[in-house]
Image (tube, rainbow, N blue to C red):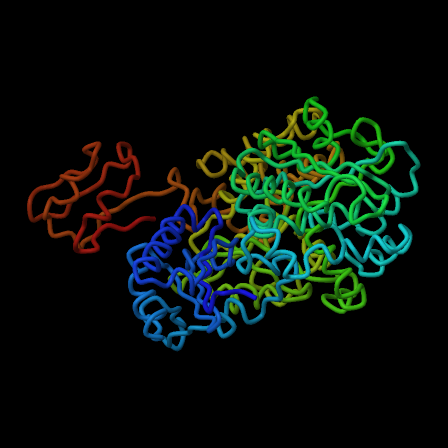
Length: 595
């Protein structure tokens, strides 16, 4: 039985660590020692709590008090007021933006109310570097149960659950396992795809940082099911904390006989190694990933053969991403029937999203499939920053598309998003407001995909560059109306002819923004105007009659584009103006407008 009467959980995810959470842990331990309570109160560094907007987060148990935006300087108050005197520290509590009331329990926060944490069940709750804490949360019990079943029974349970791959494709996981199981070979492999590359995505990283043992256990279960004794985790080297905690989990599992030879006294043997990626987006595609692990160029190959038939070193290989694996232990602990009751008819379970952009509650969330975009953005996300108007949300990262206000009541699942011209992807969700320029947004994603193209096939290598060139023309004020038709036609050609899924989906941001925001494209090419005021090449600054001739604007202009006499209206020479906005920010009379 634990000797501690209280526990203090401190977020140890990458985001909070960058905001000094490690110093908070050190300061808490020192202060508790100073007051003689180090034997009564345990300080634990956990994984990500999810509420990244309000980090660093500190949670006190057993009263479940949730402190936000904590700094090392706040530790003394937490110990003296809360731990010693039993009084909460109001200034560190979350304030409900609507009621302005302080909320001390995360269960009563809008951010958490509609979430259901399955893949994230242990993140922010346990010390990810302690196998004992994972075992205390029923860790490795699923593996023990699986080892009493036949391989066919294990695969049948996964199929029955309805779990689909969370890496973007949404292929039925149980069916994928069955293909690998049915291919006979003297050697098979289980691969975990942790090469998360979408801009704004950090789902897999957070799971590995907060609950690495769930991935180790799931990979072992998969190994038993398909008849593999070797597991490989392909992870980008830019995730040092995730790598460290995964290495710790693998070593701890080996020490307890949960990896290695004759696991739990059975004839089943399985071990895991880590392989590092250099951050190539295309290596998120399973065949490119496999080639990279083999020391070859990270390029996709035409399928078939699929990896289940001929994968790593031409042996049957099963590839799933981190989030997919994170669901596996729960399915065997609570049953396929329990899991299949969550979500929609064709999309079972929950989905983790990295909610980012122009939204109040940036963070990592997990919701049942079928939750509407409106609920995610306005209930969990807290609405748009600074009271601005919602414009669009990009789901699926560079491979996805933009959804607008008319789509807000769309239930989120694989099929509904595809029908709307977007996709689930790995779970990136970037919210945009009225100030975002949609042609510029499409250009941003095309810059990424053109740069990340492996170059193997011409449609992707050349086609994405041509799309990018046209978009650059449009946002710089050099576009023509025929460019819009070229964008559509070229995008369709790339979709139909690119070699892999990444190339085939690269035009999605262009097609979806053209479809829904065609008026913005037309304004750029016909009127030479950017309705959102974001494309600097299309902006003009003008001094109105409100000008009192104070000369503040002319004195701050870096290129001497403003002229005029004292106490008389000034003018801007548009041929010299570099559109830096310095004059507008300096004017105290709101006499300068941007058009």
